Picture 1 (tube, rainbow, N blue to C red):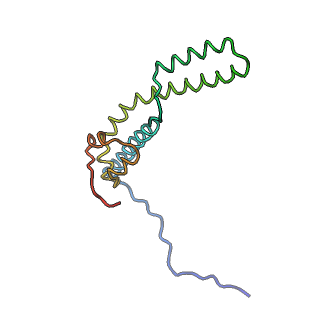
Picture 2 (cartoon, rainbow, N blue to C red):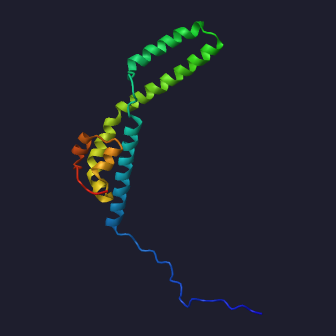
Length: 150
């Protein structure tokens, strides 16, 4: 017994690739660039969110490192291990503290393109605020508060 194949009768259309115009290519390039700038800024402010409690400074971290070095000289094996880890943690914290100071350049780039990006992508003032962008930065970027329903 032979089973007949069912065919839909519709012919497959060949894959047709359309060429993009120069303006479309430029718009896509602009969109990718703006998305990278916004992403970089949002990541920078997320990384720089201050923690609760007293904040350390470059000087206070330096003083703690000096104290650890002094204590390492006379410490037992386990205490040296703990102090070495504290030293590594403080060195990492100092690196992150320096990185937070460099956010101003990323912020300037964000201010230049944020309005265009927000309009094209439908991003509201409230959405930026929810992710930690300050009202002052949004104002400089030209993003206004609206009562847009979300």
